[in-house]
Amino acid sequence: MMNELRSLMVRCGLWLARLGGWHPVPLVSDDLMASARMFVAHVQEQFEEQSGEFKRSQCLRALLNRHPGATERDAALAIELAVRGMG
Image 1 (cartoon, rainbow, N blue to C red):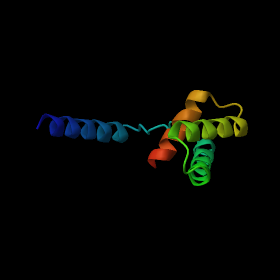
Image 2: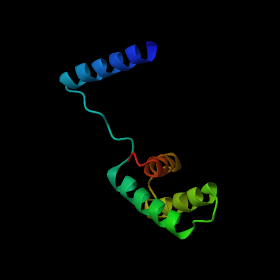
Image 3: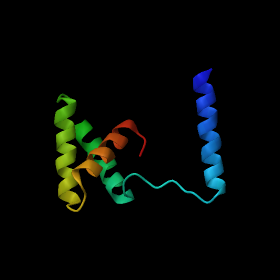
Image 4: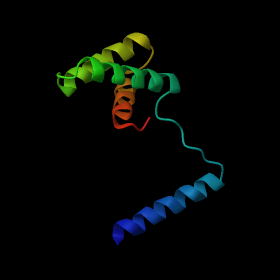
């Protein structure tokens, strides 16, 4: 009951914010996210038998090589969003 009420209040607050002109800001840039999706798909296909940490490090290295101006934090977030299918 309490979670449902909280969820309703959050949705109502977001609706009011959008009415006021607020727009959500993307967490990472579109080009970084596109690269992360590509690298995650490639690494998952290429290294099926390896651990998740190995795959993550391969993706992180590749992303930072392709986008040298990106922070490690942004690249790691882009990888996580790509893995979860949210980006």
